[in-house]
Image 1 (cartoon, each protein chain N blue to C red):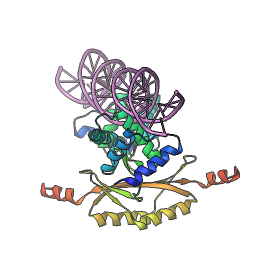
Image 2 (image 1 turned 30 degrees about the vertical axis):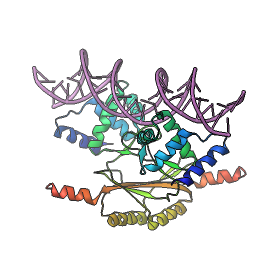
Image 3 (image 1 turned 90 degrees about the horizontal axis):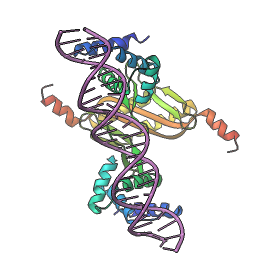
Image 4 (image 1 turned 90 degrees about the vertical axis):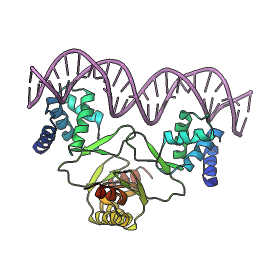
Length: 150
Length: 150
DNA sequence: ATGCATGCAAAGACTTTGCAAATTC
DNA sequence: GAATTTGCAAAGTCTTTGCATGCAT
């Protein structure tokens, strides 16, 4: 199950005198049960299936905690809402997004990572992270377009 | 000046029976006068300096037109608002941002570009653009930190 | 018991939409 | 002159905050 994450959260909470509540555990479970790139609303919906009494404010508040605890990370926004992704036991990765259907491929490419380090050196910066989003059309959507006469 | 963009917009409008109005020209000028990564609000503010009567609704509506016309592009959102950037005659580049002072270095790195193409091929995607943001600490801020006893 | 956490609802922030008046072609 | 556009204000989203009650420690 998600024991690791639960323990991380408990420790994070205890360290600052906060409490491990049923609601927080439920939101964590809901979040972990979903794919990466989830909206707060999707998490709320999933949490309500586990406990219909969970309010949306609690979801927002808990997501912030999860982010601070290193379990979640803000991803690029959707058209409308902020999206969150898993950040624990989830190695660094970049995103390749289909502009037609929205599919997201997560990947890691060592050549890109190395080349980025070179850029940091070139400008004398000390690295503190990066975000790379590649956009394109996925094979499925290419085929769809071809079949529809283009 | 920004003749090219104006002509692009005029053609775009004429092609679909829309009109080149004073307000649209003002918003275009305001948008072009700002750096990349501007919020709708910043554009509105800049537009009001050119013509105090411009309403925010017009700014939002015009940004959408500029985007459709290929002059603007939605960038990743800020914490709060959607950001837009120039999309015309604006050579491709990536950003290296100092997390301390906010300085932005624009750069192009052919190794990174090549490596990205390889990723597209690996997953069978057809490229339609990308966004790379590197974050770090610039030489100046490193020195500042060192001097202040760290 | 103490004090943090919750859920509700109200408030905020950003964006979109409806409408009468103004502007463009 | 006909039709699009505008600015205002109201409505819509998503997110945050205030507050009385409920819980975890």
